[in-house]
Image (cartoon, rainbow, N blue to C red; front, side, top):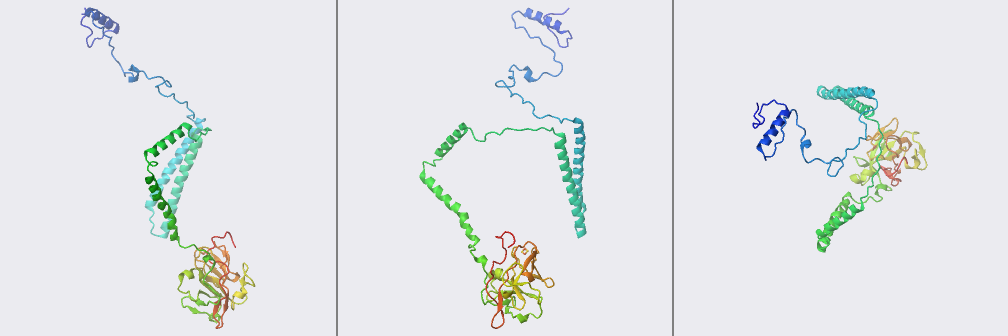
Length: 385
Ligand code: FES
């Protein structure tokens, strides 16, 4: 027989119905006391706290509740799953190749020492090919991934108005005015004026510094120091030259204007080369024209050209006697000396200007006058002249 006042004891294995009836009897026995809630044994994982709380979360979309989940807009998988599986294998293969090639690059760098030209060639070949293969495999894998594994959908999105709403603009204006007032910028004119005065020199400073670029060139690029009657001096020896000083044709001599042999600013434009030709080589003309040497400006088959390359101004200092080619060593512009120093190869677009020349009473070579066109780089011109 069970004692009804004892209540359930730990370890009781009675069914819940018996236990409940026992508890009811116990409550009746204690009279006015609050009846105890039936206690259940919990088996397994308790439900989440949210399910047990009395403060229920409002449903999605309701005030205070979570937002309504967006409907999915992109499909999760491509249409053809079998084809996608094949593509996946190809992508994986590409990425594996890229991995191996990348490791090969590192290994090549460590293995190939560059102590000789041959080793450098081998090293460059190995580094370049492994790096190229790594990038190629990565790119191919990425392209296949995008085109074959990702869902193929076309999406458009309407453009939103970029302009702020009237409310936002009004709020901004109000904030700006508040800030201006709070900064005292409008109320304290001395502060405002001195601030403006302080910024003016700062803004002018870069303009003043432009003066360091030097004076404006004006027309100085159009002229050199060569003048009528100025002797041509052999550069270095600084001696005047007679046509007879050329023992045999074929040579090239650098000459400078008498009086300016030590003026490097002047020589930067006025340096000249003179070339003695054998008879019947020069293509003459009476007036300046492309591809021709002005006959009246030569003396005894000696022609004078500007030495300043018309590309970017290097000295055109190499001469090939058999072909009569003047070569600029900087970018290999080549000029045909027998044909008015016209360009036959390279980036220059303009012939070397010819210096008008004659002889004075003592038989020395002198200039008739300055060049009739600018010497040196003609970067302001477009295309061949
Ligand atoms: S400066 Fe002569 S070819 Fe460039």
